Length: 108
Image (cartoon, rainbow, N blue to C red; front, side, top):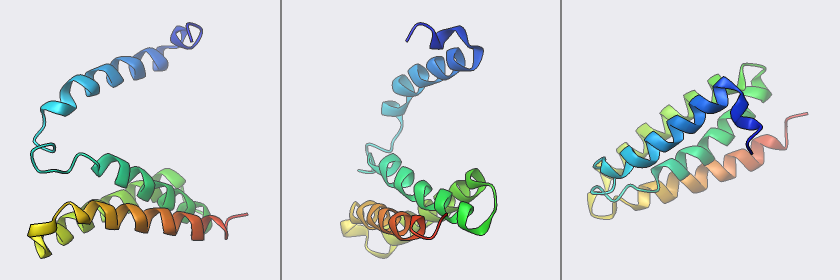
């Protein structure tokens, strides 16, 4: 582990991780009962990576596009059924996992 911290980018990543761990609980996401949004978007990003590889574009761009689409999808579902807004995250997460599984089967 100590060897990793010899690299400048790993030092910055470690500091960023610590800052995120301190700042994230302070954001109102917890108050909106959306604490699992990061998990849902990470699963959606895997589908974006697979889609990017399948289409021959940069996988990071594919992940960013799908994450943006998924975040907007969560918000659209939350507005449609406000009483059960936390279900939106589960819907997006399961869709992301399913798409990632299906699309990864087509990638060489």
